[in-house]
Image (cartoon, rainbow, N blue to C red; front, side, top):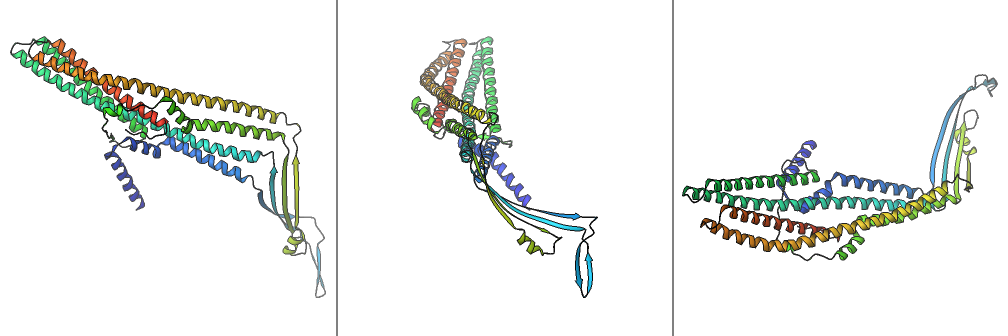
Amino acid sequence: MKKAILFLTTMMSLTANAQQKWTLEDCINYAIENNISLKQSKLKKQTATETLKQSKAQLLPSLSASTSQGVGYRPWTNSGSITVTNGQVDTKVEKTYYNGSYNVNAQWTVWNGNQNRNQVKLNRVSEEQAELAAQETANTIQEKIAQLYVQILYQTEAIEVNRQSLETSKKNEERGKTMMEVGKMSKADVAQLTAQRATDEYNLVSAESQLAQYKLQLKQLLELTTEDFDVAIPTTSDEQALEEIPSMSSVYEAALLQRPEIKNAELGLKSGDLQLKIAKAGWMPTLNMTGGVSTSTNSLTDNEWGTQMKTNFNSQVGATISIPIYDQRKARTAVNKARITQLEAQLALQEKQKKVYADIEGYWLNAQTNQQQFRSALLNVASEQASYDLLSEQFQLGLKNIVELMTGKDKLLKAQQNKLQSKYTTILNQQMLKFYKGETMKI
């Protein structure tokens, strides 16, 4: 019954996923919950947490209990115990005997140059770094999803432009055939119009194929196994692409404060300092406290088991101080390696800062450039549309030839495509800049 319910629940979930149209927020939320790479990163964080718990427990004394039980045999023993009962003397020789021992021991590292305490701090830093590494993975996934999602939006609108261009080509072809029938156009000119229509059909099919490829890539990134997958197409206005672009310095300053790769690299510096302290502890004495209680029993005596446990009870407490004198350069090597690790951490932080700056600079420059191109493209599309409308009217009146008409149509199509490309490239880079500032991407 439980298996049937689980099966039905899974099927309902898959059906719901297949029927829904995925928004950018849906894609990101689903990836955060289900992406395998992100799950692996979270498991590494859990491992780091367990390591931290273990290092904390090592600050406490250890306690162990043990017992051993044995049976012995003395084949050549002739003497034994003698008892007198009712005037009769009984001699008993025990060749087989049984003994047992019982021990409880405790050990505590009182001081080892603070190595154990610094190890706790180091493991806590490692746990934080594992958490930040998972956030880095999540950010990378979100950025890839946004890039593919914007490509889908662009390609969807590009298909519509190609479809409109095809409709125009079909009308021109039909008009050309009509003009040929009345002797106002040659077969060669009509053939050119037919070729234009075929080219537009090819461009439309190619654009639809490219859209399917982008959707497939997004589906694979989400690791979906459903056959049906579609994306919700939000309305993107021209004003969205014309929004003010934040300054590069403000984005970079915000990124330095909240980006997980920067925080992770900064923790690398802290980790290096702790590793150096742990390494230096190798030069310091170690103080250990030990204690234990023990007792034993043996079947060769006449005493009862409880009496033997009490009589043989023993307890002891001790302290051990270990002073390193010559350790074959182990401590010095560890210290030198820790200092090298510190330098590597400093370089890693600088590298991360430079990479973040380079990414932000690239997004900012692309946003600025494409926004300017988009403004020009708006004017260019309006100009080319008006020019083509005029050419179309003049062509019908026989004032323009087929070459001029096709040239005007190509210019209009190119202007429309340039407008779309600059629009969505601007929107994508604007969202990336917001994301680096710590804001949620919304399209």
